[in-house]
Image 1 (cartoon, one colour):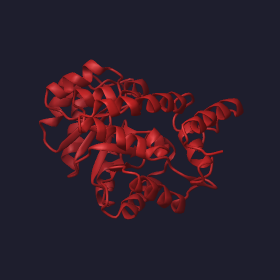
Image 2: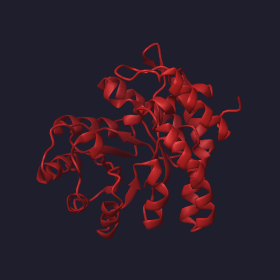
Image 3: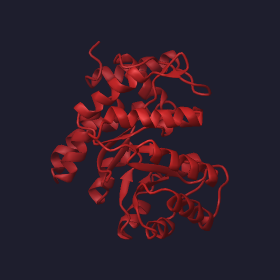
Length: 289
């Protein structure tokens, strides 16, 4: 179901509430520029700072704004299996097309515990699952053999692979498990190996660039893909010069889409870092002034 450029949406806040007018404008910008899927309530969307009620409403509104034009992959994971099950069911009720569910963080379960966690979510929710592996944040790595076991349960669309380990991603694909890059820096090489697309942070502010890269690789136009990768590499380095999603939201605010507002513990970028980041955006034509 999920292919090409899927944006991990930034959450626009206004006076500590979700700014749904801004969200609608952001979604229209994404769809108009070739984005093929929307991910609300991921890490880039500051999901740890949501209440459950806010999360459910964010997913419902995203589904409504997308209006069937592109699929919605709802962020709905937790390190509590019971909570992950509840969130996945709520995402299904909200009309999402799929669920992004993360390996349990902080608990650091063994691989059997990881399997049982995802098995419980699989059995409780009828939506396609995208398993999210980001051991740098969770302290828990989803090994290829475990992902294959989960996939054998059925209705697993892909693994969002953000371990940074290309060999591990390759092994997943060799086992017949679809992979989506979870890191903008690795989209090009992983797609060359057979990944189906990317869940992208930088697509928030350069959606056409990321969509064009995915399209070029899928069309096997590697010369064009390499050309696009030059800009993507530089923009990705800049976008991760501070904690995600601080730079991405700073870019969107500078573009006029939302406020430069965060929920604690995230804070605005320091002035010097912000200036350096915006200078890179100007160099690449993202900002005109």
